[in-house]
Length: 121
Image (tube, rainbow, N blue to C red; front, side, top):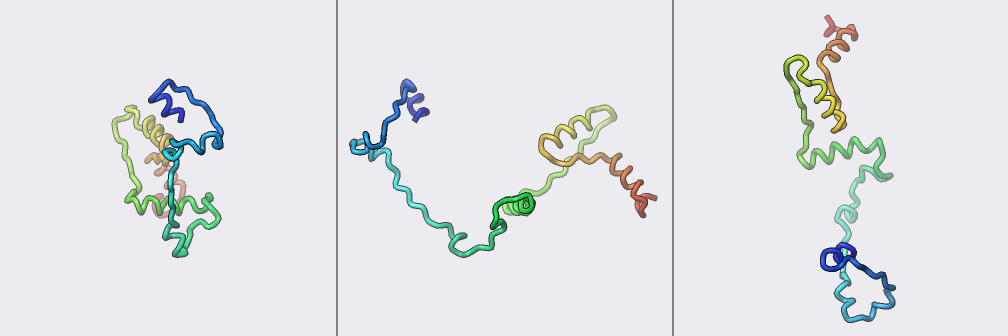
């Protein structure tokens, strides 16, 4: 109501009790005949992924399903450039802003070397 009053008038509004206006001629213009049908998913007894609600255990599965049905797939970004050009700075900012991992080649090589397996030779 405030938005309508501010856009079309002075912005002033007055709160009234429903019983004071229910029999006015114009009140029908404010009514809404809303008919809601039950979703077919509820009628067919679908196998629910999260019968107990969304939890930290079910969130990864819901994320994968959401991405799959919308055609969203993981994006890999490679940032290259000469030394001291700001690669690490901007990659860190992107990783923090989007909550994604920031993998550095040097760290990956060091970790592989310390692993002591066939790849570390």
